[in-house]
Image (cartoon, rainbow, N blue to C red; front, side, top):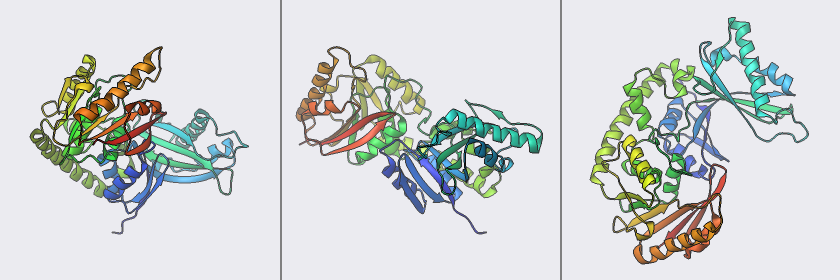
Length: 412
């Protein structure tokens, strides 16, 4: 039987697009193109499923449904009622809509308000089902069974174009399932994984230390990378513990339910991820002491330990209370990677304290980390000057809406 490729878009934190591009190609996609905030790719359904389950840096994965052009908001409603919605969801499914905007004609304002655009599309879907089925599906903003993304851009023959996509994920992919206790200003798990990969950390030759570990995101993501444990392993464990429990919205879609071959592939991936997780946990037991975290705040260590327990890594990864300026490398060659405080809301006197902290980090590296490598991820760009060391490389990244830098240092 001939197999067809389909179009997808995987989103990610700004600055990680090239990493995601490489990841998607490695997972088997034949065509992939970087776009701000993510990667468009063509693939068979099996590859898209692997991206959902294996990508460490993707935020969500969307499947292209169709596009149509329209003149204005009234035309939007009419065009949307021509979509064969019964092929995309069941009447009994709950659904949610999200609208984003691309390049729009500056002289028109109809689609500047996402809530209004959502309302028009919702009305079209509901009226379509009322007309064809006699009943309407329900909206669930918190736990929908089907989620649609509508992207509105400048059109070609008409002023506007709408591109409809499925969200295959449900909860965003950065929500691995281990973050049960968070400290202030945490970074998302997929951003942490991307930062570790940007640092080119080699777990076979380098140890890993985060001396400002907070809730432990860096050390947990480092452990998963070192052991080659898929980032979906906790979701998969929950799925196996509750047969029939839907953890991804793709489980509700005709994309999976009407494709027996894809269902079989999903079952194979379930067994594969389970085996890779078991092998990875065994590897981490042998790596005990190579990946460590510390923090001067007692509450942060409690948070990190809670998260390590939830991740099933508390017996393999050591976190303890300690001053970063008294830390030591865990191995002969190590990577020091941290997200130190950067004072998002600076109060009187805090700037000078932060400058002293960053200077102290650089001074400590000179004494205790010669021959090692280091990285600082910070949203306070000015503080990097206080480190007092020359960076070997800088990366522009975003932690939510905050523009940040990942600064790399080779310590001689």
